[in-house]
Image 1: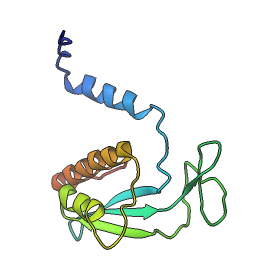
Image 2: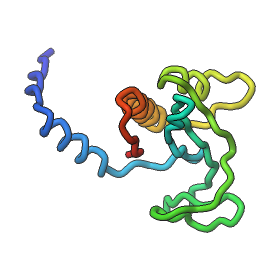
Image 3: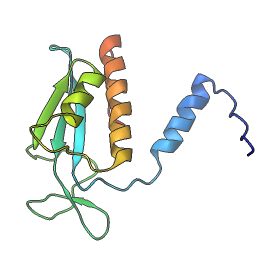
Image 4: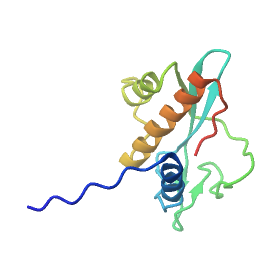
Length: 135
């Protein structure tokens, strides 16, 4: 068995360029919904609002009540199905993934991995006292 060569280390600019490139790839939307992540700086919390959706035959996320596609940009007045919060990324993940009182609102592993990355970014922003913007 041949071991592939290890990739070369990246400097900060190369790492950011790779991250930007990977953020542009196609992902299949989770039929169990999506999260909007934000910080409550005053309380020292990372928060995540969960919203349900349905995926139509074109692969678009739609409002379950109206069946209309959700806009990609701009604000949408919707009521979250649940709001989660934690003081750390790990605490927030445990609240979402290990809550035995309700079913896990995530059905795709790539969605779970994305949320873990975003929660870590949000925690870093909270710790550094800088704004957080969800990718």
